[in-house]
Length: 196
Image 1 (cartoon, rainbow, N blue to C red):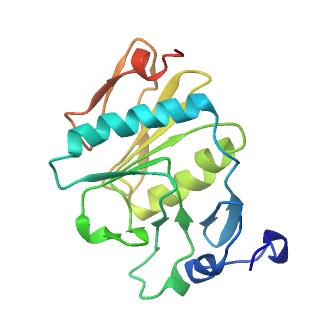
Image 2: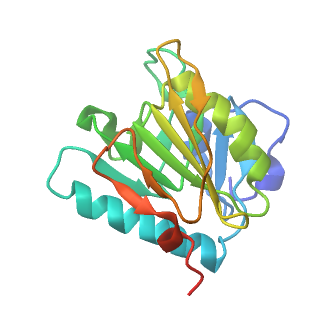
């Protein structure tokens, strides 16, 4: 299948379907529903993503945890699934940190990463703040950062024992942000949001 126009965008699809598609557009599946990934992100988005990826990679290069940047498929099964047909959520987070090597395979990641970072840009805000928030929480992502470049703020959500995200105080320029998952990772938001 080469054209997305041949799909029923109101239909329900699985990872098995997703593997058959050869569209030019990048897609994500959230609970079986298709979401188009907006065209190439802007320069500021890419600078922020590149800086975070580089800093995290430097920290992890001699550890068991690994960091990956989009495009990188993260399959989030709701239960202990046995087949691609049973997986209804496949997302491509901007940055994923995975500390369990058993979750990593040639297709990407099967199961919840420990830490996900999404960078908001025009066209993806609702999906990241609503739909993805829910599936990340349900699947057990331990730490979720939402980076808002326009307002220069980072929203941090941490999974508590009850399986729910709690939001921490928003972090803004002038502050340093430390990861819960990797306590020796700290980034200065002045540096992260530097417009040079």
